[in-house]
Amino acid sequence: MTGYRAAALLSVLASSHAFAPAPAYRPTTQLSAVAADTITFAKVDERTGKPTGTSFLPADAVERAAVGNPIEKVKLAKDGTSAFVDVYEYAAKFRAGEMTWEEVESADMNSRLKYVGMLHRDKRTPGQFMMRLKVPNGIVSSDQMRFYADCVERYGEEKGVVDITTRQNIQLRGVKIEDAADIIDGLHARNQTSFQSALDSVRNMVGSPLAGIDDMEMVDTRELCNALNDLVSLDPVTQTRGNPMWGNLPRKFNVAISGSRDDYAHTHINDIGLVPTPHATTGAMGFNVVLGGYMSIKRVAESIPSGLWIHADRESVVTLTEAILRIFRDEGSRGDRQKARLIWLVEQYGVEEFKKAVIKEINSYGRGVTVQDSQPGPTEPFERRELLGVHKQKQEGKSRVGILVPTGRLSVKECRQIADMADKYSAGEIRLTVEQNIILPNVDDGKVAALLKEDALEGTRLKVNPGFIEGNVVSCTGAQFCGLALIETKAQAESVAKKLEELVTVNRPIRIHWTGCPNSCGQVQVADIGIMGGPARRLDEETGKMMAVPGCKIFVGGRIGEDAHLSLEPFKSGIPLDDEFLIPELVQILKNEFGAVDKKIRKRDKVKKMLGMT
Image (cartoon, rainbow, N blue to C red; front, side):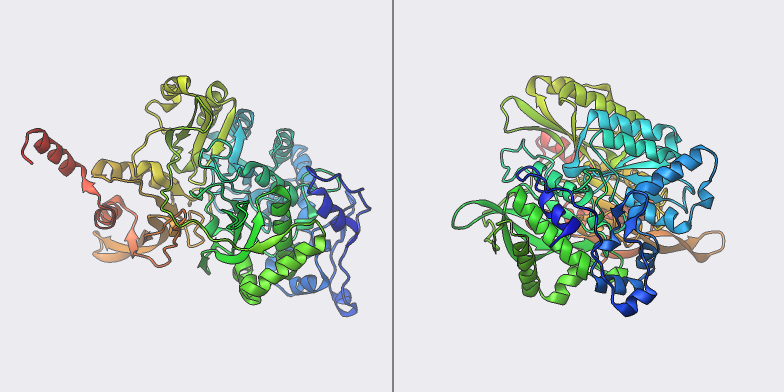
């Protein structure tokens, strides 16, 4: 093991190891003589002297990519890591008036720029992008939140918004190429990046939103998420963002680390899920490793036990993740993109053989990391705790305050209000949740009452104590910005939740997820009630004929936490989205499946009780 890869294997462990001397960049791929005559690709970016992502692939992976799917051919023709420099060159040309977005090569515009987090919204907002960041463990500072607002304000109230995602992440809407370089520099100056956050990259590292403040915490996930973020996006030689080692994966890759039995990270729907579990004999804290969870048009899969257990320390977590990533990068499918996620490779191996391959790879690094068989999980009952509202922390005199952000959508004004509240009450710290909400941690108990009276929380969208329905809505981007979505989701999700709150009462949180298409970015299969955009028909009163209208499928019965379960088959299909059709369907489901009661009936029962009639 020599060259760039060897240096990387050592340098990612910077907190406990000195950095290896930076070697000369050296491509590793050696094609066969026959393949070399027909396959060409750049091994080094001549502008920077850095290796390309493709240069780290073994020869057989390159050869498979050459006859693979269209995205693989795009990456061979010009490496995705070229975007690390291209984005600056394009921005300069745009600002100088030397180029317009229509003149950018289509493959750059719609594919390669995703390697710097730039996703072109060509169908909805041509020439403008969604910029996805990396926010490990979902921790944001007030300065960063204000910066997000500053970035999107120029694009107007409709397009210039900020979204919290289902991976504790941030997406900036409306971004133009001419502004991208300054935004990226601003992020890097604030210890954040957008590099390697989209397309075939390792996505945002999800951890516990209660890390370090939870009295039931088993593992503090913050350091681990940061270490993994550096593994995949920090160049180990230059110490700048953009790591070519992981610049050409077969498909996207998701990692989640849970910190408690609540599993706020949703490990069961990630490629790698780390589930905190003490060793049965020694009591040492570690992780059972689950693999292969994901959602797509082709398949929705819950993660499966790998049979692996590792210690809950930085070196073990980084080493395990790196080993699995290496196997996935080098051996994953470069053909059908719908069959290129990790679960397909695990099934190709067989779980036991894949386990052996991971252990062999780990041992080859020589770091002394030990892997053991998975350990028994807890058996005593446990109820997942709420994140919204005011709750005591393990620190004496401190509370966490969870605030609803409906569908994760934030205006410029709301971003600044949140930043101001964070400065005033939580030392500038803001935490994002996979439910697309925020938490202000470390609020002095004596200041909680004042926080709850802030103008930003009085009669606004942002709420500390929303209803059980309104407070548990999750939504994908929807047709407002996403060209794949069949329906608008965010505005309708917020509106429908409010109407349901007015109609019925439920005695526990009911999670309603919306997704615009079968890709299920809104994760409808994990929801109590999931609404997925799809076709529907209704009577046209003018013609007397049935007509096609926006509609949905409804899923029922998904679960999260220790007893996670995916609802894979629609409960109902072909429901028109108009309130007159959708609302009655949802009310009926809430009553029949979740014990909801009409608001007016509940009020009448209370009056009877007060009068001694019951």
